[in-house]
Amino acid sequence: MVDLRTEIAGVRLRNPTMLASGFLDETGGSMARVYQAGAGAVVTKSVGPEPREGYPNPTIVELDAGLLNAVGLPNPGVVEYEHEVRRALTAGAVVIGSVYGKDADEYASVAARMATYGVKAIELNFSCPHAKGLGTEIAQHEDAVRDFTRAVKDVVSLPVLPKLSPNVQDIATFALAAEEGGADGIVAINTLKAMAITPELKMPSLANRYGGLSGPAIRPIGVRAVYDICEKVRIPVIGVGGIGSGRDALEYIMAGASAVQVGTAIISKGLGVFDAIAKEMASLLEEAGFASVPEAIGVAHA
Image 1: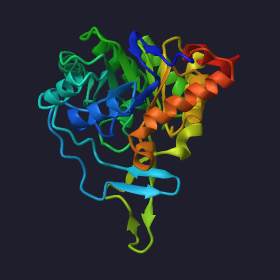
Image 2 (image 1 turned 90 degrees about the horizontal axis):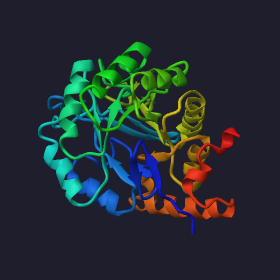
Image 3 (image 1 turned 180 degrees about the vertical axis):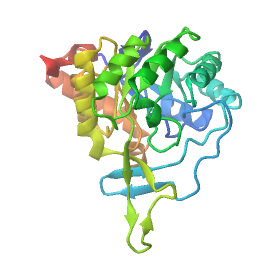
């Protein structure tokens, strides 16, 4: 039997699948259900220093190519969110806390607070493509990625995992900047900035006009990003983008990822997608002669 256990910067996972931030993570109960359905870990929604309402509807559009969303980082703020994290932890979930802010001090402050809740690591959302003043606007400057990461590392003792944007020329250089700032791992990728127009209405489909594209269409971009990042950094990488099967997950693993995050596929496949991915991965790994997930990490670089 193939050993599916893996590890990210000292955080041990029973299998490589993780709930991606932004899906079913508004409450501790929903995160607990995802973990009980088979995910190796769950990542919280991205929370900031204060409550944020997000954008007006429509915020999500389903396209042939995937899912386009611009929800605008709605969240109750890091203080109010504590009981949701603790509820998920009480249910036994391995929880990674995702945080954002407008500058390095805010990132550090929110991360320090989140670290007291019992999460296993801190994910830094440097890559939301549609929240003005946040996310991608930070991730487009290597110095900011380095400095913001260092600011968080200075105040928390947990592993710190910057989530990088694909909306840049060379994502690997940003991963290197994060590593220089002390990052313990990299999460790649977030959604791609995109747009849809409703011809009947002669206007953009989203109230925010621009959104982030997720789903199968971005998987080849994510796999390439992970491959490029693993050529430049020595810290572990978590792959994200268009993963809905064990075969999809193995693309990322063989590109160098130590784990993968799943989001959009939940909509069409339900919570059973985590268990299905793990089982298909085990079957494919066994057929290929691997005894464990770590044996397969990065083999496409050989």
